[in-house]
Image 1 (cartoon, helix red, strand yellow):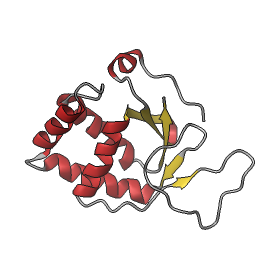
Image 2 (cartoon, one colour; image 1 turned 90 degrees about the vertical axis):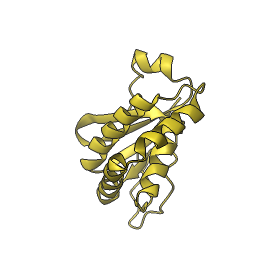
Image 3 (cartoon, helix red, strand yellow; image 1 turned 30 degrees about the horizontal axis):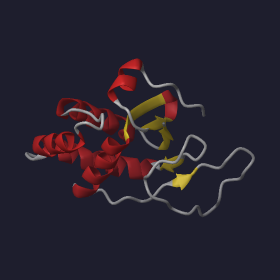
Length: 148
């Protein structure tokens, strides 16, 4: 799968590497790497227990019967990792719970303040990114890749 170029509004806003997710049916989500790390940590804070990712087989390779589980740090476009449907569903449930928390605005504000100057999202943008990620994760398995 070839990664698409970043939309122009994201080019100016994000100076660092971007994490790009692809789901079935050409669904896509992207965010700055610090925002991705925040989404991973936020899910865990609100009860998501990561099941681990698997590397997609390279062209010409066969998939393993018992794949080794890896972390959620993205590799490059040639080393995409897959999050399985049951894992993404649990993640989306945890993040939906996070959005209902009375502390979510303060958490998003603090993340945005800590990342100020690194080109990551504002608090309002993080609310929107969180909702977009939840919608993608609810729909099943997806892959993670880094686009720099």
